[in-house]
Length: 464
Ligand SMILES: *Cc1c(COP(=O)(O)O)cnc(C)c1O
Image 1: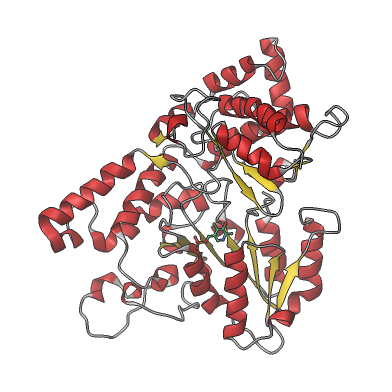
Image 2: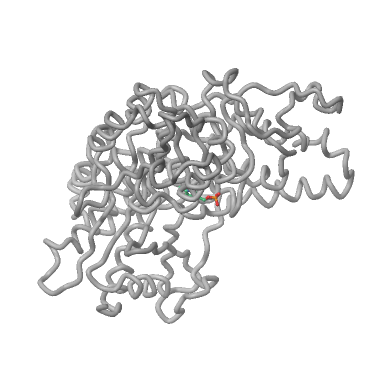
């Protein structure tokens, strides 16, 4: 892409538009950016839903054979075309040779998860032995907290952000209750300042400085699911550890979206799901990370046979020889069908780098931001005309690809109008519509089309 890495996206877009002799709102710019996009061929690796197959589409408003405008990769990534092939390979192996499949074939089932762990290394910035692919995200969070949350009479709190994802909130609440702690006193929830949507880094650091001695674990999302705010993970890690806290992250919305360096940042532990930006399908195989510095000191609280070293696992003598690090936390034999889906997606990621994806992402989301502000910011909108506010930080260092939009008119009604016109995105209570142009399979022209549809949706939406 035609941009220097430290140039702001709006500046890059202006420069290119002026070279083309067009305005930033011109379709020509979108088409040119797509033409120049070195990642554009990745679109073909995915099934992109067509207008005619969408349940709530109004076929009088769209071309039925056209591709939908899929901006929901933050919630459920699209299906890689290879998934079906890989699933069929393992189904066939199972049909033809039954239990022999555990040990032979392209993906011996016993080690299927370990076989693909290296494909996650560059995505999360960790060594293979620091990564386990297992369970669901919330399960992994519980398993990790059982080790890393070791409350004492003076250090017993868990610090998290306000309006954390419900599952994370409940997991932490129930972990506190499990240890007989009073949730009110032990769950330290950090709220944005009055009238602000997102947290300020200075406020996060101040709480850590002030309360750190009583905090056992700091657990933040890497990127907030609702606001789209990307937290400064290395700074939070450093500040927390300086106070003697363990620091962990939920990377559900960060993984496959922004660059991560879990190992180099010294993060203690992390977990993530793989069905959002990682495209592994609903309920896909989740991930967990424990830094290698803890490999021989942190032990799982709950143990199963797949935590036992492979070389003696099947001796069945019931003398545990635990795998050091996060792979000792594995409980059960890996779900081969989930491994197939994840493998198909991770292979695509490994044909490029997170750095390259992120570079496109910054420009793609910057383009969307520019167009939304151009047509809909309160300052640009005509008096009494609806306006749109972007809640997500505009600083590229503090966001990934998602933008969260709020409207001066009924959000639900705008959302319905978008659905009728083949935009797939989601609404989240209390008032946001989340849109995520994903650099792997979204184009600049998708963003351009989205803005056209938004115009027609806003003018058809009910006022309240
Ligand atoms: C998507 C998401 C989850 C979902 O948890 P599962 O265990 O995969 O159902 C949890 N936490 C966060 C922050 C999420 O974004």
